[in-house]
Image (cartoon, rainbow, N blue to C red; front, side, top):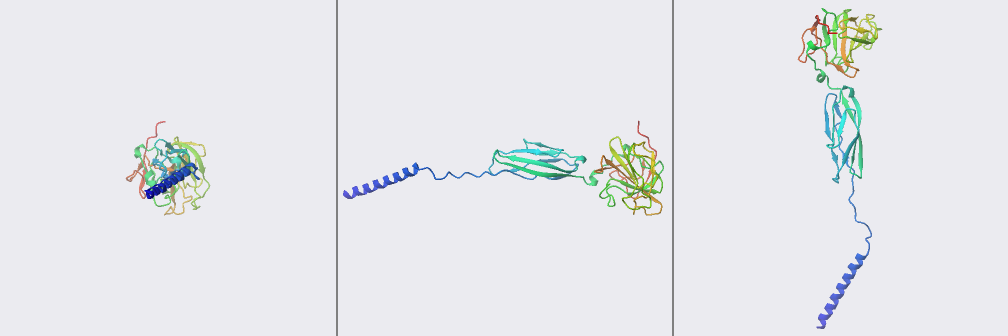
Length: 311
C-alpha cells in the first residue's frame, strides 16, 4: 500500500508541474508575430508590337498574378487608332496609312495594393507592295494615260518590281517613249510643285525635272524626268485632264534609256504625302493588263480617245 501511495504522489506532482508549465507559456506574449504571405505585383505580358497599316489589331491583355487577387487593368496611353475594353481587357483597332510609324502604349495592372505600369511602342508598317496593288477596272479609273491621244509608250518598269522602284515609288510606272513627246495631265487638279532646272545631259539620279499636281481628293500625281525647259505650267495653275503640261525628257535617268534620244516618264500617285503610293491603271490605255489589272513591263500601250468626266 505504501508503494502505491508513493507512485500516485509522484504522478500527481508531475501532472501539476506540466499544468503549471503550460499555464506559464500561455500567459506570456509571443516574442514575434506570425509570418505573413508575401504580395507580388501583377505582371503584364507584352502585347504584339507591330502590324501592317491595312491589318486589324485585337489582343486580350494577359496578366500574371501569383496571389490570384482581383486585378484591374487600364490603358492610360493608347495609339490614336487603338481602343481598350476594360471589361474584357481587349486592345483593338484598325490603323490606316496616316498611322504608319511608332506610337506609345501604356498599360497598368493593380491588385488594389500594388500596381504595375509598363510602357510599349507599337509600330505600324507600310503593307507589302503586292498587298496594296489592288487595281479596279480600268473603265472606272479616274486617270488617263499621261500622254496625248494616239501616243504609244512602252512600260520600262511596272509596279512592285525588283528595279529602282523596289523601295520607293513601289506602285509607280516608268514609261519609255521618244524624246520630247508631250506629257499630259492624267487627271485634273492644281499644280503644287514645279522643278525645271536640270538639263537632260545631267544623269545624277537626284537631278530630275518634275511636276506635282494635287487632285480634288487630296491625292497627287508625280510626273518626273521631264525635258529641260519644257514645263508649261506654274505653281497654283489649274489644269484639266489631258492638258499638255511638259515634254518627256532624260533628266536624272542614268540607266533607264537603252537607246539614243530615249525619254522616260516616271508617273506615280500618292495619298496626301510621300508615305504611301497608290495603285493606278488608265481608262484609255490600249494594251495588256496582268492578273491584278496593272500594266506589264515590256508591253506597249496606246492612249485612245476617252470621254472627259462630267463637270
